[in-house]
Every structure is written in C-alpha cells, then in structure tokens.
Amino acid sequence: MLSFFFVNAWPYYLFYIVTILWIVEFVIFPSHLKKQSKQEKKSFFFILQFILLIIVLNFIFGWLQIGTTENQTVQNILNYVGITLYILGLSLRYVSIIHLGRFFTRNVAISDTHELISSGPYKILRHPLYLGLFLLSTSVPLFFSNIILTPLAYLLMGYILNHRMTLEENILETSLGQSYKKWKHSRYKFIPFIY
Image 1 (cartoon, rainbow, N blue to C red):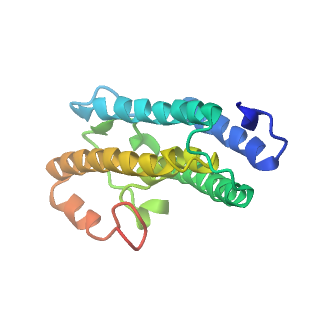
Image 2 (cartoon, helix red, strand yellow):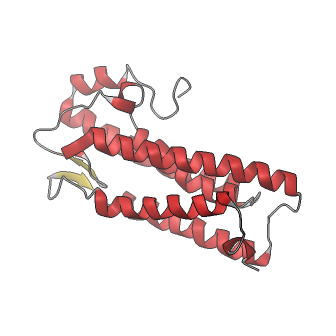
Image 3 (tube, rainbow, N blue to C red):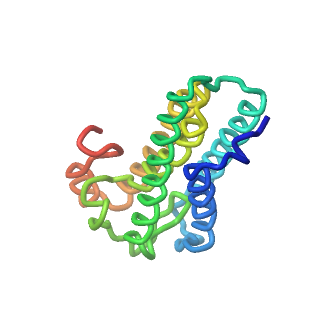
C-alpha cells in the first residue's frame, strides 16, 4: 500500500514541504528571457516529463512493493541521505536562480545583452541549476528506498542533463565566443572538484 503517505515521521513531512517548495519555484521564479532568437524549448519539456515519470513510477513501485528494500536500517539510511540531497538540490536551484537574476530561463536561451554570471555557485560550477535538478529528481526514489528506480534515475537523468548542458554550452560558445570559452575553462561543469 501507499503507507508512506501516512507515516508519522519528520523526514516524510520534510519531503512533502520541500516538494511544495519545488513546485512553488515555477511561480516565484518565472523565466525572464522570452521570445529570444536563440533558444531551445524541447529539452525542458523532456526533462519535466522524465521527472514526472520517475515520480509516478516511484509511487507505483512503492504501492506494488517493487524494488523497495525490506531492511529497516537500510530504509532509514536511504531516507536520510535522500532528504538531505533533496534539500540540497532545491537550495542549489533557488540560490542559482537568484544569482542568474534577469538571465534565468527554463529554456536554453541567450539574450542580446547576455552577461556571464560568476557569483554564488557560478564561481565554481557552470551548471549549478542542473546539478540541483539532478539532486532533486534522483533523490525521490532514493528517499523512498527504491533500489531499482534509484540507479535508473541517476543514469537517465545524468544522460538527459548532459545533453541539455551540451546544447546550452554550444549556444553560449556560438554567441559569446572567447569570453565564454575562457569563463567555462575556469569552472567545473557539473560536480564540484570532480567534473
């Protein structure tokens, strides 16, 4: 059954609060760049569909008890790791959006007056928004202790976001040229101090 809806434990309440804050992100932070000549919209909807698929599959697998571990200690560890990464992912997204300011958009888009942001998480990473999204989406099956969906979510979301980052970097390189190449070589792409 969907017993995790009714579990009386703080990690679950915290999970639902963070989920609401993730949804509220769309209202608080609308896309600023609209109707630009250089933009790509398809990948955003593909990412959104994938996230919804992972969430729906997580609930179905949980209800059918497919891939969930029975070991309570393992479940507790995965709950705590999952909720920690979930909160970190949302925090990273909010901070990154605030630092992007008027250049934030959900589509890959470049304005004629585009500036490279080098503050906040952009001091270290080229794509902190995508890292936040990766942590949010992959933390859902991890939090609910699904050992089948967790690696699947990591692999597929990693692939999808890598494709999106490549699209974005190609557009930025074409539009901003050497200034973007210099900027990007002084930052990690996705994972601090690793990649």
